[in-house]
Length: 403
Image 1 (cartoon, rainbow, N blue to C red):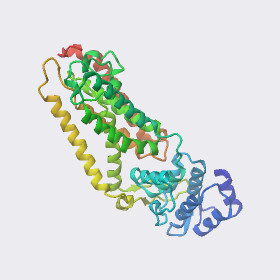
Image 2 (cartoon, rainbow, N blue to C red):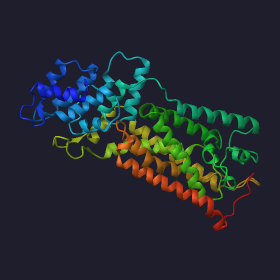
Image 3 (cartoon, rainbow, N blue to C red):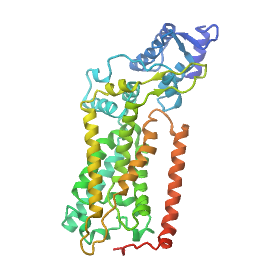
Image 4 (spheres, rainbow, N blue to C red):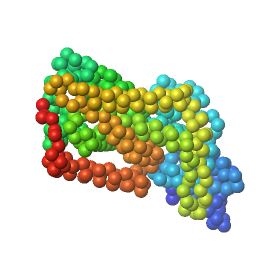
């Protein structure tokens, strides 16, 4: 049953004889259960719970039609968010954590839903439409490639800590160096090189613990775009703000993922989410997903403690990078790698990443904010390109000789 046939069914059954745009909640619940809709029982429970949550006992059926259409198609669309935003997100009290008889993989999917998504309706939507194919291959592949590159250079140089102090390290064709700006691939490939075992371990841990769950929920295209945008913004920012410094490590992408996820959780905890405007039939908006309820509803052990630990680890990594940048370099080794990529990645995460993560059930192209972020990022790219082409010569920058 599609959207038009459901509307026709409501009209034929004369459930709204006065054409008010509303039907009784009990009437709608009977309609859902008496006709065969291609929905699993849990989605039907969600639909009926939404209908029964209206205090006046009436339902704006246009919005419920939108919700049914979205559930049937299993596609991210604005109709899904609009339908649930203009009604209470009232679901049964027993959440996914009370679901019995789940296998190991489904328990992991449930954990990911509670770890990444702040609202119960979004968690249920993800849990029951999740498919294991395609798997989250991007973050796993990037992490594996970084480990392989590190092992190769570690064995070749016989050095596993502070590899940048080795004079042969900077000769790698993957490292970003201001003297090799014309080799454009280096603005991205530097993410496969790392200062040492400590930086690689930190980045790999965050990529697997945060990046993989984010990829499972939001898809490979969105997360790969966010990660690579952070990496590219990191190298371009270094080329503008720290013109003499080289750059290694995937911290730009890692900080884009982590800052986007943390900002999304904090905003849900601290800000109310209101349905905007009125529906197609004049249904008034209502506040949904109250922040304190969502935060308490996450029900993941030590969620706040783990957030604090993540912030402490990220801050300590930035401090280590700052110390390394300004520590006295060894003879003939030149300036040490810059720390500005960390900050650039965090900015990308809070802007572009937050837009992506708060749009789990929507198409990005339908959002005005997404185009604003893209315009800002594109403007930054154009400015950075012109800077790299002209500014170094105009300013007479003292660039260390390329290795």
